[in-house]
Length: 450
Ligand code: GLN
Image 1 (cartoon, rainbow, N blue to C red):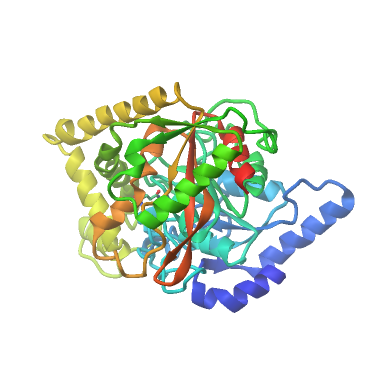
Image 2: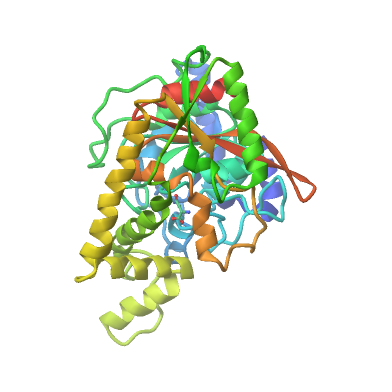
């Protein structure tokens, strides 16, 4: 009730939620009370969380931030939704996001922009901007996000939160509306690494309904919390501290790294030589996969259908022209182009080859260090509208996050401190990148600083 009250009070301006259903949330809370009374509670029983509106949820409106799905009610539960429900968590609602998770500022949402609670004139980051703003403004205790190229970590950084993108395949993608299937991964967004560990314990695990789900034993993500960092080798990629990084962010990140040295970490310089290729590679591969994934939105099976049309082809064209926003159309056009006969080898295949080189850079780096640290985003939260008409500058927001998705590695952002920008104190994130399946150690690395 306390969270619902805060939502009532602040959501009309912050716009973090697309859908709220107080009755359903309170019914879940009541069930949680009963479970607590019966002694069958789990750690998240009764904890009010929010779900990114990319997860299909039975009976809940599920929009993915698009007009295309404005009339879509989920007919089943995504695995992530089901797991949190079974753990007894209370779902407060579905959070705002960039349309089909394409964006870094939450400004491509059909449901309007989201305010950054630290400075209401600024963006919360994206695409999980609603989840980030909801946690930061205490409109929920924690939230889920998804990260295809930085969409958990960059908004966590801009809103002063912790956010983790797990190793590809740890969290089921069943019922998570697909953007770029080989990159998409869901993860927690919360106030602390401890909270994220509790959420990881719930949301990970093999799922036969997702063909890319990994068959591994369930892990306890709390198990490393509190261990000493003595002797931890921290790699700093020199390419992450070069052109493009704002001096305010660099200063905060460097002071956080100095703290790690005091905690016993050993700092080593490493190189990820193909860093500058990750954005061009991503903007071939992600649109290619998106153009294929989004072909299902045709006005027949789900969502928006144009009111008037001449024939079947005209119905497809009009429904898609009306249902999709500008950024989604841009991605579909790029994607179909790079996949077309004659260009496939030159763009798509070439990008796949470079993707392998990027993964090999990390493999080599992890022979020299245990975790990699650097900035999450090149700057602090920018003003709403500032980059909206400049896609390339928006794409550069993911300079340090995208390579992690291309390699399938786990990446995390934790609050590093604050930078003074235009007389405001704005949060800065520290990114921690780990080797495959090293989330438990990463959570402890973040925890030690918190
Ligand atoms: N900002 C990137 C994009 O627009 C990443 C988005 C994401 O991780 N979902 O594609």
